[in-house]
Image: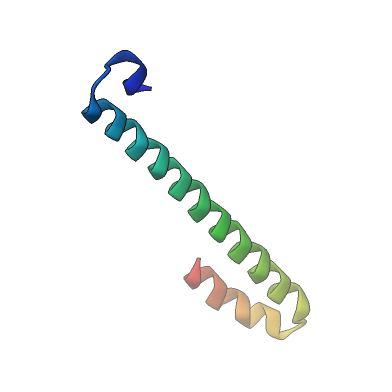
Amino acid sequence: MLASVLNSPAAVQASIYVVKAFVQMRNMVGMYQELERRLAELESQFGEQGKKIDGILVVLR
């Protein structure tokens, strides 16, 4: 990281900021995958009405 090349407090803070940003991004991806899984479950639970719900889910996605 930047702090290993530049030995300064600003470089350390920048490295911490980058790591926190990636952690937050990973958490957001996980939330969207969970939402996608739940929507797929809902789609599979409905028979004929599932087709109507599909239109709504397409808009939501």
